[in-house]
Image (cartoon, rainbow, N blue to C red; front, side, top):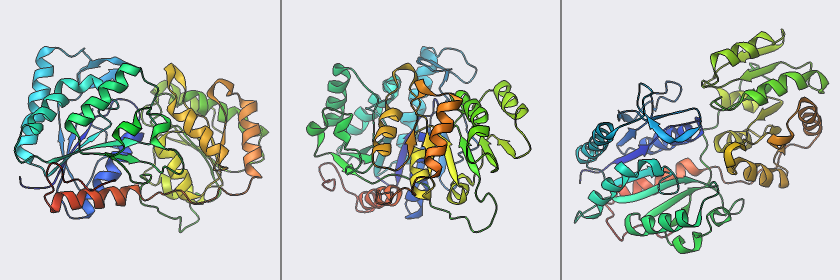
Length: 388
């Protein structure tokens, strides 16, 4: 076993988890260990993973929000030959990387569509006499699941995994709040704190006092963007510069519609690499309530209004928004109640509210990297994981 980390990352929809994975990968690399990312989605230039070795597997995609049908790079439903080629590519990468630690994003709490390659990988690792440590990287909140899925998750964790890195703070959101069997894997769970990109405070006047409206990846952000445009004249911040970051996945037609109604004090862009620096000098953030965006908000200290994504049974963002709002960290508008009027009311309320209090553990990247570094450099084997 040569050492280093093999980090499995699968990108399907949105960019939040991808940004979190990049932040983790760069934090691990900063410790001096070798990091190889097994990247399973379509190439995404806005999240380049600069500084680590990225190996692109045959890319898996989806059409719209249909997670049930995996598609290849050409948009065709994957077939047996594709599945075999993808599985072989992952197993070959594992052999070549010869890692001391294997870190798998989300699975088995999600990514069930990829059991065709992950279970063979885990079984290959499991039977080795001197095997690497196997870790799961998972956010603080899971979507609702069926009871049988929970049983399957526990069984998979118990058979193959040594540690579950929960990127959250139990004082804010205990993992058991959305994973009912958390007590059955309590010995595997290690809370890392929230993973946020390195904080960059604004040191110039660029972007100061702007209202930033962001839609994450943009695939499902159009209603928020248009509501914010319509709400603006009725807000106390109408005379500020408003910057709309639509996300790279917003359709070109909708992007052009947003740009067409922008007035002279409105800037419309798809993406900014200095998003966190802009937040630190903004006067207000308006966004959805994904993990990365909300933690960037907390790290920056900016006042914020969030509209959680709730379509197709998604519960993660709504729960996070409710908890953060209850603690006075931001204001939220339920997606079902989103109109220009309700958004304007929330903006005006937030504009006169005190700044959000501090106190949430946001050191998840560094703490995760330190834990993984210790495993990789001390050659900790099966049964030797640091206790949570």
